[in-house]
Amino acid sequence: MEASDLRFASLLGHDKPKALLREAVAKNKMGHAYLFRGPDGVGKKRTALTLAAYINCKSPLDGDSCGRCTTCRKYFSGNHPDLILVEPDGAAIKIGQIRELKHQLTFPPLEAKVRVIVLEDIHTMRREAANSLLKTLEEPAPGNLLILTADLAGDVLPTILSRCQIISFGSLDHKDMAQVLMQENDMEESLAFTLAAVAEGSLGRAKLLWQEGLLSLRQEVVEGLLLGQQNPAETIAQVFRLSEKGAALKENTSELLALIRLWYRDLVLVAAGGPEASIANKDLALFLPAAAQLWSLRQLQQKLHRLDLAERQLLRNCSRTLVLETLFFDLI
Image (cartoon, rainbow, N blue to C red; front, top):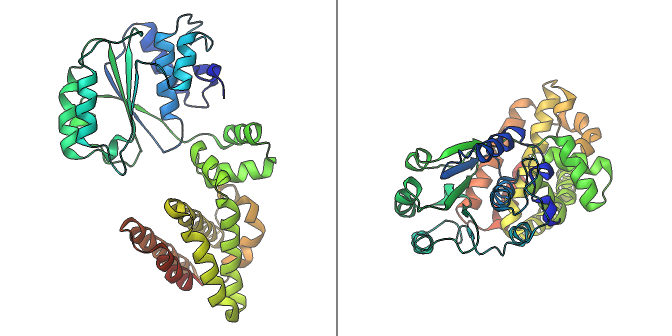
């Protein structure tokens, strides 16, 4: 990626949010606080950085930043002195981070017309931190723009919502995602479309699945579970082997469970006679009809509920290995 990619013209999808933001800049009607709300990994942070570059670009052109000037390059590298990024410290944004931010905002911008503050994953913010931020959101010092991001399902406090203009981001088009994945990773078209489908419109998640080898591990788990059905003698060895691999993913173990959930969702879809176009695991489509006959719809629903339980156990920091071992035994 290059600095020229921090242009609205280079952003994938999200035509309505881009149009709203560009129009606000063109008409000098920018708000002082925005909440970019949508699925994880669809480009909310990149849109925020693109907006920052556009507002402060030295040579804007046709409603967009130039992507070449020193300002654009500084935003691309993340080294602009008037760009402040606040990310969760561990699992949450904490009050100490908000206090430090408020101290920084007592000083005027160093170079930019508008200093841009991006607070990521605001749904993780603890209540005391959120309360500390309210006054800043309501009346920020002149020359500051706050952009908050949150997951669509994130629990954002109403007091935060009421002080922001909300810009909604949807999932990305699978075809567009596949094109980007092929260009950036030199992968085959069939693999790119499979990644786009199982990532459910999140380009960031698709890249994670590819880089961490989760897609191939998903296939290995599916084949192992089916083998356990056909050859019970191999069941114990399969469960221990797959559990060890899944636990080694650490924080990405939940991503593996999400992929397994999609497999069972596809089985429900096939068993119920649903549309083929809705199948996510397109590369495993040949396995689906035979696999769907192994269980009733009720049994498949029970397996989905069992996956829900495993996900809750991971959130409670239970042993990953133990969670996966008991899960895989139940799924087989």
